[in-house]
Image (cartoon, rainbow, N blue to C red):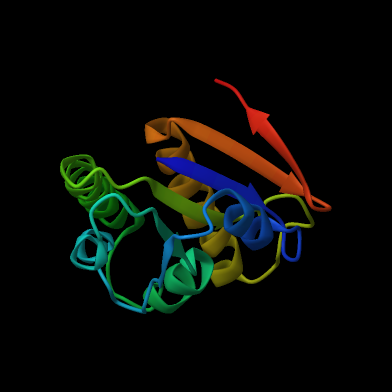
Length: 143
């Protein structure tokens, strides 16, 4: 799995399109489980998953604690990675960096930043490669 992370308008999509021109793109829908992306995988074809911040935002209304939600997406990620490995699919996740700014006063906006940060950490932990994109420049990040 490869993760591309950066701010809004940083050039993440362009960087992914340049590296994976024949990829299938899948936007996460509100309420969708991450593991459901397995159904759109095509053998030997990269799969780009995007729309994570909107997905997190839409899902915040669910009456579920952050810990159980995080546990669920970790389990889903493992299932997704197994599916990708079995079909020889390179999985690419595009993430928004939203933690570099003023801490919002609004409780929901602070929670969104926490959830996005935890999601990004969990994706980076499982990734083979993490790329940071800023001003169209792509930099490999190490562990």
